Length: 257
Length: 71
Image 1 (tube, chains in turn cyan, blue):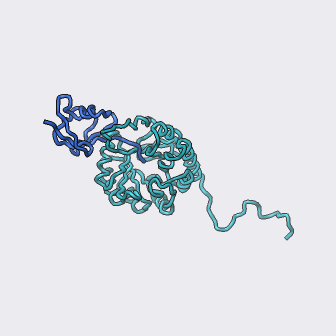
Image 2: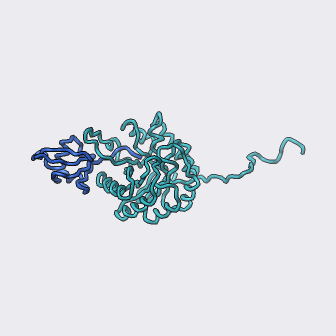
Image 3: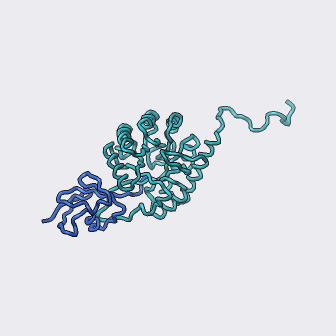
């Protein structure tokens, strides 16, 4: 499997893993290991000053995983920019998964605000990976303003519906010159394999792993699916046809006519 | 006279004292581990290494933020 390069970094693993919704920090740490991931997302939130919880970052081995802070919770460009600056101040990391989701029901990203925030953050030296709807025109615009990758959604966040945006993602894949990471809604390893077979550069999975009955085994299953899908893409899938194309010889049948 | 600070959106009253005069003191007072936190004081980001140099003042709005699990 070829390596993935985003901005100045090379990744052997094409499975990015989100760290939300895990039952405990230890299950999360074990699942990250089983996933073989090198990139994990985290969010920023207020400290509960009445009940300061343990430091969740302590469970993530920073020497093994590149942290990708997100701007989840941002409803417009200004809120996303504020979160990105805080994330950089908190971690020293200039990578940011830019997400602007004003609608709490479907959590669909606001493309206009995302583009606005991306322009500012790229100017400020961030490596910006925007979470977007599978909109090929927006993907191009974000690429033009200097985003390091684009992250189109498969279906709404945490919905486990799989690749509902397949046709538009294939247009993005055809046109993009930056890596394309299919994010959100991948609910089963087969969904991830499908995205990788299409030529996605990577996938990001959180809910499907974290909320499985056995998150560690599910993380391993996603790893296998991503590797299988990527290998199939690199091997070159054969063309489809409507009619049958016999696999066995069409001569030498045991009959006279 | 006590001071009122807005911390993460909640109004909190404190008696200022030499032991409780900086942002670093405040975190200690609230039993929040400093290593994991970034702060904003009146909209300005304050880095961890500056917590002990950042004086508290009456009426400040302070945000204490940390990383949590997320996708």
